[in-house]
Length: 263
Image (cartoon, rainbow, N blue to C red; front, side):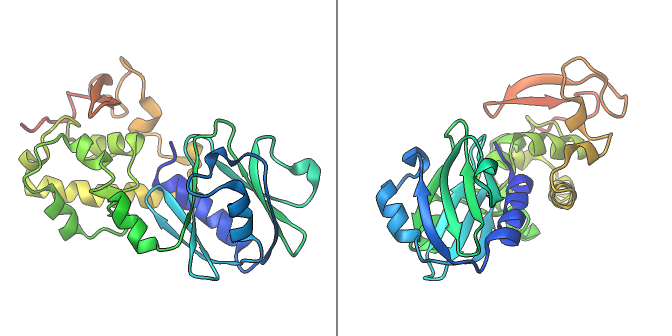
């Protein structure tokens, strides 16, 4: 599932290719991923409109239209965007296409159909409805710490809960815990304040770095746990072995010799 850095890359691509372009025609090849309007209504709502901006909230990308409405693009596991001109470049699993007046197209490709597309008339109301927290790159340290107060869940579960903060998924949560020497099963409100602040700062650094690399994993640091996610291998710093367990319902990697558990 794409996490905040991946969706940020989608946002950059969308902004660079599709803003300020009038949609001359919309084609819907498969309406399954369009969740709150029919395929025919989707065509009517988008034809003649122009994308004027975009807004990312964690794993959600909202494309702003010239009527102050939004198109939500939640990419699921296999969603992708393709900007192209020639028919032979059309993605194999394209579900819908925007034909712009400049002759180019923006196609939404999704082989497994797990993406979710919605037409949103009131963005603020929709965000309140789904209960999503502030974007993990925009949340303040004070708000982050306030949300941790009294929480009896694991720190892994806290980071994954999108109502606390939006955008951190399984891989980055493990990385945050590893780099702060905190066992992912640690109870959130048992972690010392100084260490909670370190978790916040480290989260920001990790997300900033990932965004700057356009989520090109080969350029991630060699000492990230990301590169060593196999049980029984030596931890990146050589201090102990990588272990695996289910924490907060997700497969989790950690090193008990390096990461302290707070209970």
